[in-house]
Length: 332
Image 1: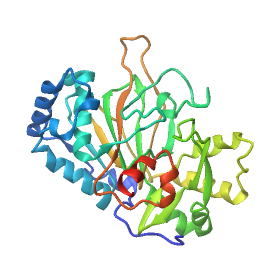
Image 2: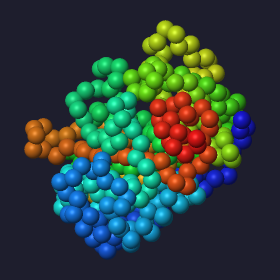
Image 3: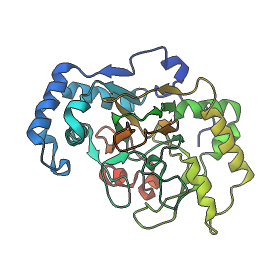
Image 4: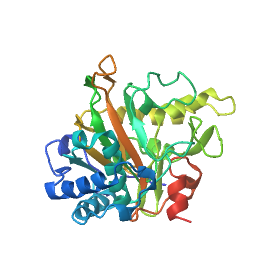
């Protein structure tokens, strides 16, 4: 159990990165041309049946390598800009994203049904309207959290009428700051919490039990969904949060919202955010779509990917819906 800050390139502050530009890159035209050729050749086929061999993108491999290096040896995220989603259309964009994913790793299921690409958009319900609705299916603000598998790739197809600002945060820097100020609460977050599985756990479990932070094989890892910790309290067999746990979550959430901690930006069509689910937390502000089927609506496509250069995973990750498939693929 860690009792103090850790030295890691994934520890950064948003106010520092806001003055830098190296966390974002425009995809070069010759690399886009490779994807264009693949999309044209593969339209009409289901993206799910396509493999890496269907995407001969020699030039683009350098960008994919840079992404993978950043995920594990760098700050833990990268924003690619300039993908021509308007030209590709929705079908072609799905193919292009899937193809990029095959060169980054292996797409993993994101829900109990085994879906490996999610549409992140408002379906007209709110979190809490039933026991399975997840925040990505709403237009509500999403607090800082992480997804599943080693990394996620989130590609913007279109923006809504207003809102929907993306927010990124270093979970490592937040831990370090908590360890400096309240080391006893940093330790509390390395102990078990009950998380609501939202009906998505493959074995049908209503909850999964694990720490928020885990230090394993020299790496600090995070698994945080604060809303799911609180919604798990509705189950009669889940123990109430202790005062120490509540204090730790309260201090953590205050740090997440502290001025200067997060990096924020407005996604544009053609932007693809790739981020580590081990060291980066992400969220968004609330948004609204234009009324009517023809108005602008916010629509993202998402992959969860296991990567070949991924870190060793803590053994208890094998029992989580977020990391179970990645653990099975790489650790067994």
